[in-house]
Image (cartoon, rainbow, N blue to C red; front, side):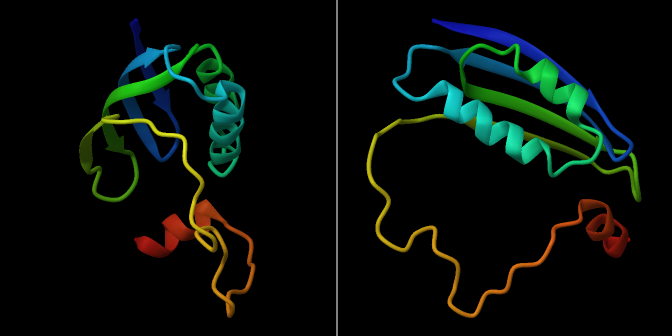
Length: 118
């Protein structure tokens, strides 16, 4: 069974509206999935309140329609559709997530990145 969730998030950088179709009928670790989402949201300044609201969504999104209106720069509007077509439980090939040998760690700064794009 799927359930529809309408999600609207506003920040100084963009306004995002999503329609999510979510199910609990998949065999995966939903707690781990939510931890991953929380870690990704921490990279975006000012999204703590949004993350608290997103925690209320109980399940895994199998389809999403997203509309993003940028607040900065050109004010561009983007739309996307994401849909799960299959779910499998497999091991990633060795080295899939290993950084290149010559990679150097450096802090990620979303605001600085956005300012450099203008």
